[in-house]
Length: 439
Image 1: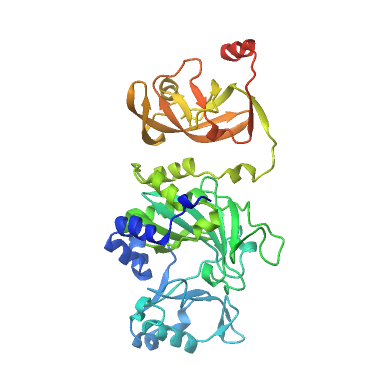
Image 2: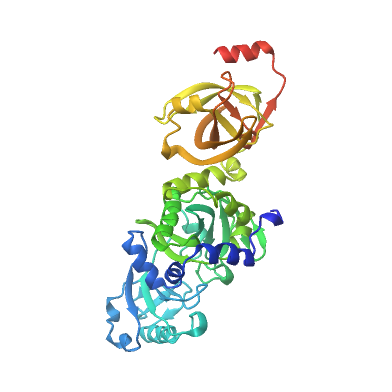
């Protein structure tokens, strides 16, 4: 990870938090009660609130018997998981609830804890607060074996309607079943393009397995990944925040739900991904992003990790020719054989405007962004489209710039960005070139 790509505290605050986040957006993010109200109005899934306490007198008026066997007690304006009690089940034998930390809690204990919340014991500046009793979201079966008792969550950083970085936060015994890193949870980086975990970071070092077990923390596939990202981006339109973090939990039956929004998210996500936020933010800052679906497409095109190519199995290095036949997918999902030039001198893959139109790739929903290029004709603005093709049997989805003037023999030029895992043989017999071109 290069130092120049890392986002620091001052840069985060001055360049992004203050510049792109409105006061209204910050107010929404700073209050769990207001977040719930705004997201519910926007039809963005979020755990249900069973009860809200504003005054100590509400405690005696509330019917505690109507609470379900599992729930979470939270301060509305708490930070870093402080003041949160997660109840997992009710014990009829002991006549009390059992928390994720394996402690017993009675109605009187709950009343005392909520009284502390109302007095501001866990709020910023110790100002009087509101206490919430919220739906408990259990562990999704795909993540259950990686998490100690509590519910893991997914932190997604969103900027300009593009999810730029994500991590999975796994509760541990040390964190008492909570997904807060400073309390001892594990941070696991996630490849934006595939939803597959890459690296795990815990107590200042990278680890490969869940502590005390042989379970690998890399290669975990997050369920409903595209929906997770689209849900995170949808929060921007609902709150008006331009740069923020979203904590999402996977409900076992209902799917992704927004747990919390942070207008000034922590920066440890960079350690989990071994990648800097600064460069990623700069790449999407000036893009015109239409909606959540478009923003997710851009993210998947820009931020694929090289690790994703190695997750399933080591396929070995494939040798390809400098002139190669590829299969290209059209907008109607049909595939067309095309002769491509493998150009290690070019970084990005290009496609001729004629072929892009023929395949239906110039549709507005398939254009990722436009970019200015310098050429012999001056500065021209080219659209960048999402292109899916198969090279030597390997499926590749990548941004491809649309060029108006390209040699008709090679309507696609594949740049080195898409050549990881390939070895290009530069020695090609002229007869082979003609054979490929004519086929």
